[in-house]
Amino acid sequence: MDKQSQQNVASETTRSTGGCPFRVGMGYDVHRLVEGRELWLGGIRIEHSMGLLGHSDADVLLHAICDAMLGAANMRDIGYHFPPKAGNEFENIDSKILLRRTNELIQQKGYRLGNIDATICAERPKINPHVPEMQACIADVLGTDPDNVSIKATTTERLGFTGREEGISAYAVVLLNHT
Ligand SMILES: [Zn+2]
Image: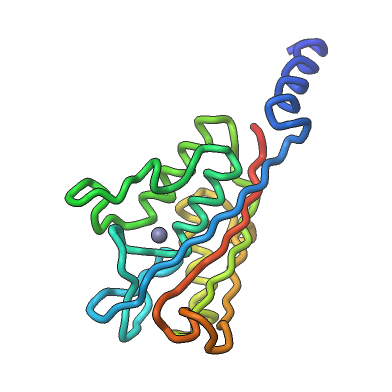
């Protein structure tokens, strides 16, 4: 590619991303904790007396990450692409499949994942011992280095619905690079 063509591509890239080769997105999700469900969080199963209720496996962290990735690419949200309709293909689906498809969607629009920073809010179970396995799992699904996947955990000091163990919430911020 000659110099003029390179400049044209560069200016097209910066114009389509508002003058910046990066795009930031945020995601937030909540699921209710109930008895009789498996707890899936960050792509892994965690032993607990309760699990998250949802149309899919209700992996609240993966859903927040999907929404952050879609938000960064301005591609609506997870419910838009994977609607929770009774009896459809997404019922009880492994959310790692949704995360993989989300990564394909943003790549089709010309973006590539930079890094993720996420926070899980849960009173119980203890999340921190599971963080390295979650990081490895998410990095594997997204084809990135585990160092690009930061996962933090906090309680809400027994306050609010997470503090009362009625549910678990998750926040995620994602940076995408324009390819
Ligand atoms: Zn969700």
